[in-house]
Length: 519
Image (cartoon, rainbow, N blue to C red; front, side, top):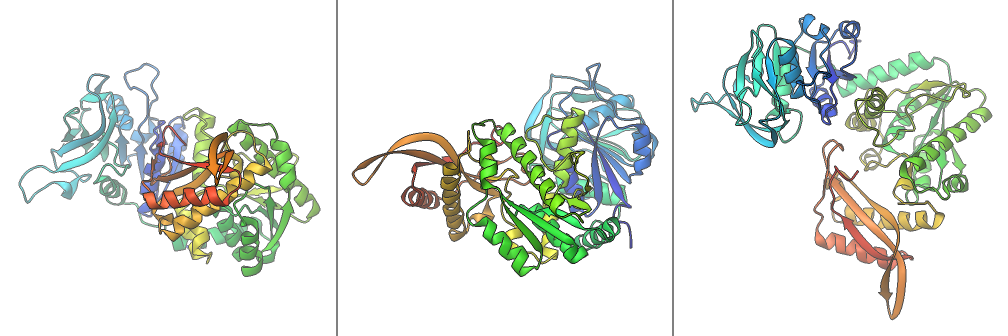
């Protein structure tokens, strides 16, 4: 079996908000890649043995004395290197060029004129017209390269950056001032594909079929004759992991489903029907609703609520594993974005936006070994894996649901009354999105409970009830998002039904804020 990691790309992260997008674009071309902070050692770079290296963008300025530097081994290995935005500026500065700051800023849409042939742009040049191709790109920079390093030529220019793209074809070193990884750069995917497949000559080994085969082989080797305990939440990641483990080790898998009182309407019954009845997976259902509500009583801070819920999940797993004294492993549905974001926070290259309760290992008192088969996969790769494993389409492609459940969709303190109101309102919203054929046209939609009361009138009576906010966003990466423009008829129907059918609600609002700033 060919190792699907054999040909791989190393992405060094300098703190760009788009770094994960670079990795996803490389994976879309079926080549494995990993993101690591720019602080890695030269020894690490050499040991990684990449087919090529990508230097991400970042918020720093190359002209500052304390600016992050590219490890020397990157340029000593002799493999292709692509610097993006800050990565291009750092490459230019360290190889003998000159970077200036602050006077020719470009943010947002720009046009780059291709000025010279190169393996990176290649056929993007408009030969038929006899002129130069125009690239529609996304810029985000204050500094710019003012003088090229020895051996480089300019292959693209924009109004704000005469040296918007550079190349040393002989050494296979390339720099782009714009971001090819974002969808706003229309030819960006083709540029990255040429770098990865043509310039780096990486083989497309990272295919869904081979991923599944190697995951099954790896789990089988790692677990051996052991038994595995899995916390099954009903979300996409844990559901796919349950199906994967069940195929690999059969009845040596025991799933623990914690009904914490913060799930969607009828979700517990649906989960049991899918896994216990349809797939034959052993699932233990633990009723811990009151326990979670008691632990959350009086707590309004969203990050504190996340931590309370995460700790309590671990406590329940510990208790269940103690009852199952023949269990050797605890499986978690950790996926690659969890790993990246937690590592970035730990190394100081990114701020903590939210904590991940399934990253960071297990309490020392818990004597189980940790099993995380999905930790190399992005969400879209997990979904494809779920389909290959035969999970229901509606389960695999359902919208993301946070680990803490409705606990973070209830603003402020969590109460049983609030959770009951919210789950009923959310169910109506999902039902109408499906009925109007809009559920799969948006990336994520959900209802939020606002702990404020609003005056309303029902019949001839005055009401003083709570507010439900509806949210729907469109995004390709969940790092940025904009509000979906849902049809007015759909929103009006949802609002009318919620007010009429959910006692305790007198008003429905639609959230049109984008991310950032809203998450």
